[in-house]
Image 1: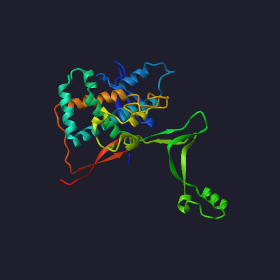
Image 2: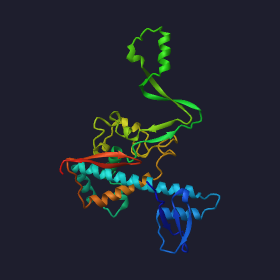
Image 3: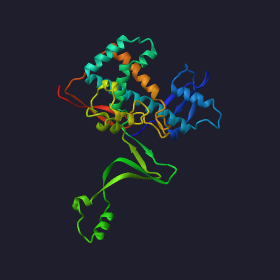
Amino acid sequence: MHAKPFTQEMNLDSTPQLRVTSCPSLVRITPLPFIPLLNDDVVLLVRANAATSPSQALTRPEMLSQISTFIAAGHETTASALTWTLYALARAPAAQSRLRAAIRACDTEDFQAVLDLPLLEHTVREALRLHAPVGSTMRIYAGAAPECFVPLQHPVRVRVSTWRRLSRWFRHRGRPSIGGEEDSRWDLQSSIHLRHGDIITIPIQSVNRAPDIWGPDARAFRPERWAALPPAVRTVPGLYAHTLTFLNGNGGGAGGNRSCIGYRFAIAEIKVFLVCLLRDLEFSIDDDVVIQKRAKCVSSPFLLSSLAR
């Protein structure tokens, strides 16, 4: 399979235009004839970088990486969230009807009124909780201490390494342990040992759907749950609505510096699309259609089967 570099034409000023090729190994800028100015995010990024002093400007690979962030993090995630929200509403026609009635009763010309619409807020929160566009992510431990122990709320069973089992066997002179051979294979661990460079997986979707936090119906789409949340939900230090969908960062609070910097814009964008679509359109799906969630960078719906063929 061969990949061709993607070329985007961008007008940086009112005179010559530049062609920027976004393949890092083939970065080149060539002048093009003038065409009308395009005021999109990528153009603004390049123009702002060109107006910055050379010592503070982004390098070409850095700028191309930011462009990839705009496309992947700023487009695919919001599109995935909107898709799953419409899917959830199609599976819950009563919730969709209530939301449509609330939208039609709202002054949609008032942008702030749309953002503050309670039922719309609850619907978006529930969809982002149940269908987080990114189901998990990773972090690397780089704390001040070369190693640390992270305590666990509930101890977990971990398999005992072979050398420790042999050590126990010799210590007990070959006698079986009190719990038997099966118990000798496992240990209860109440903390996690981290060293510099260890990779930590953050299970966003698992926390968002945990029954011990959200209740026995954690996997159900119920926007009305946000009117009276279980007390355990408030213990989740999420950036948005006590969920880990937008993470929470490592700044000691709910606004850490590793959280999503564009979450407010993404939420506003999803709400505006929902208002425009649901006000005049009804979304439905056949009961025999099976949709499976598949994740690459973001989760996407996949038609698994349909019995109505």
